[in-house]
Structures are given as structure tokens and as C-alpha cells.
Length: 338
Ligand code: PEP
Ligand code: MN
Image (cartoon, rainbow, N blue to C red; front, side, top):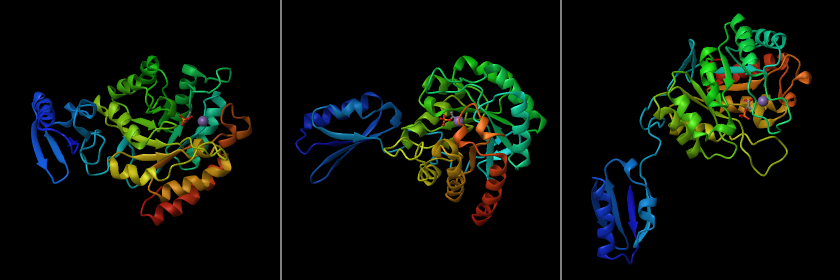
């Protein structure tokens, strides 16, 4: 951490800053330039914060010089991490498309969806049993029954399941149903208690980006999970809130190269919640793969018009097949497979 002193800083003020640094057992290095005096703190940066110095007399500003996220940062692990979901790799050369309905509705709907997901060539299936709905009077999900329905349908086609955990009290049920990949939704990205709990278990986690979260906040949220010992984290961009109202959210494609630089963990894209309309999904999905995403989380319903949730953005089974075909060419062009 460095503390930049004001031009007018006195020796006494410099002394107070160095004393504060030394009080936590750190060394100091004072660099006296022509205009500025910069004090370097030598030691573990986690023991010091800018708030400890910024309000001190004579201090212009202070800042950390290494990233505050440690485990998830590429600095700590230079090669790409590959997360294994029951033998299916996410983050390697092969791109994974996780497809399925927004929500689990009935056994017949999930059985058909699982068959269609597998037939399209996808290796993992999505489906929400607990739904974070904006309106409390709308369908809230089929709950624990939905989890069982999902498990039964996906097992017939050997598809690992991805489903959202909203409430920490449901964690044991998720483990009992052996959910393969736990999704933390956009609205819970900074639910730190929930993040700590999924950090203690040995299950891969998809961490969706908060509606208005910066990349630094998202990385720090992932660090909460990693700090508990669970390093199996997959970032998922699903569109962010901006001034634009022509589509549901703005898909931040730029986050892909940025995250790839900042973290060794896989990055996937949810084009469905970004666009909010099924006709936008193929274009966004192709852009994401071209930009280096490791996979997609896509909504597909056997009969989109009948979907109980997010009907507008669900692909039909035929559209999912077409999307998979068109992604094939893009994957090959960038030296990957699908
Ligand atoms: C979902 O994937 O069904 C979902 C609710 O997503 P998000 O958290 O991105 O809104
Ligand atoms: Mn949805």
C-alpha cells in the first residue's frame, strides 16, 4: 500500500503515518520526490486500508498496489482453471452450453426439455426451482418438488443440473438432491452470508454478475466464496442495468476479456436474461463465444409460449439446435470445440 502525502505535509504528519504502519508490524519506505513524499508500507496489504490513512492530516490519498482479491486473481494462478462438473470440463478448450427452461414446471415439461437439451448436443441442463421474481404475486417456483422433478428428468439423459440457490436454509436440500452446479443469481451476488456458506461446501458454483455490479465488486464476491475453501467458481455475465430500455439488460461483452485477464476462473454468458427476447439470443450468444466466453447459460422451453416464466426469451428446441450449429463454426474459428 502507498500513502501519498500532501505537498504541505509536515515531518510530524509523516511520522504519524509511519507510526500507524509500524503499529501493525509493517516496514516503511519513504520516497522524497521534488513535489511529493510517498510512503510505502511493506507487508501484507490486507492489514491496511485506505480508510486508515485518508483522513489523517497531511495525507493526499492512499491506495493498495496489489489486488484485493487473491485466490481468484490471475496473479495467484496464471493458468486457466478448469472446473469439472461430473466429468464435464468448464474453462478448457471445449465450450459448454447449459440449456433448459427458466423454471421447472412439471415432470412432463422437464422430461421433454431434458431430451431436447441432450439432442441439441448440450452437456448440462438448467432450470430454476426457486425463482427470484420481482413481483411477489407471480409464480415463485415449484420448490423442493421442482428439484426432484429436475433431478429425475436430467438423470435419464445423464445431464448434470444447474439450479439457483436463493436461501441458505435450502443448502442441505440442494446437497441432498446432489445439485451438480449451484447458481447464485444476480440479485444475490452480494449476499455475503450466502456466499460464505457456498464457500464452505465442495460443489461448483456459478456466480452471476449483480445487476449494477462493477467487475471489481464481482471479483470480490467470488473471493468470498473462494476464501471459504471452495475454488470451483464460474463467473456468469447476464447483462447489466443501464439507461437503455430497448432490451432487458445490456450484455457487457467487454467483461469477457477483462475477466480473462483478471482471473483464472471460467467465464460464461447468459444471453437470455441479457436480451430478454428470444430473437436476440443467437446474436448475443455468438458474440460471447467469439469474444472468448467458456460457455453459455441459455433458456430453452419445449413450448416457449406456454412457459410459466420468461416466455419471451426462451428458445424453442429447433432454435437451440440451430444455435448449436452456428456456434460450431465460431468455436472452430477460434481454435475451440463445442
Ligand atoms: C435465471 O437464470 O433464471 C435468473 C433468474 O437469472 P438472473 O439471476 O440472472 O436474473
Ligand atoms: Mn429466467
